[in-house]
Image 1 (cartoon, rainbow, N blue to C red):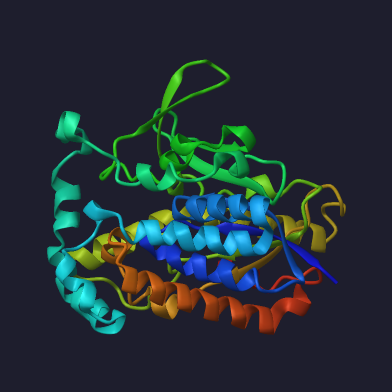
Image 2 (tube, rainbow, N blue to C red):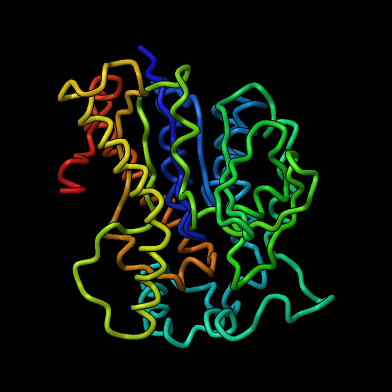
Length: 342
């Protein structure tokens, strides 16, 4: 029996290759159907690739589209370290990057130089990657519903793009870290005025509420790539900034999960009648052990060796989830929200 689920894909720069692996594995399970995807930043790119490939050529098309996306990401020139690292294996390379992290030129530049300082020489390095999407397929009725989140600079509110609203600029807005990229200007159809947008992670990483529609399934699988917990208190400036980044980009997700937990309690104790609000069953695919070994440095440098290591980790995490919880889908949630917020 086919089980329909919704996917919530977090942003996290190059760490989004973990989600690539998760999707790659899920596509191999004929009993799982993706009804809808909400994504932010790297999650938006993954969602667009998945949707375009699925709309055109089914599961094989989605796999191929994701492979092409991350091949393009691994070739982004000015977001990568020098070419001399190309011969290193992923393990030693991670150790080297950990040592080098406090001295990362990318981080130093992003903290000291505004992206507006480059004048006419400014280029968004993600634009050539995103422009290669087949937007006829990304915006098609076929395949899963797709929702992409960005943050309005002026109002601080989340904006969710869907259907024909999804464009190169919408995806770039969702992935627009303001210390690296100039804000993306997009017209607001309600006002006819151009508005500036930054990364969606500030207001929805990703936004879950688009998935609360009655026609969508109850099961919501969050692919989490920002560690929720770190046992050690950060002491160095780099580690402090890294943890601030993780907390900031998890805060909106945690707020929505807390709201889901609250509704579940109201239904369970009879305060709210069943059917008045969406019954959401929350699941999560993550590898916090791996992600706590990484940092904001590896988010900013899409090195092919690390991208493929993350893909393999994502496949393994998805395989473990499906082996352990496929029978729970449609029946019960596998994330203990009471414990999470207790």
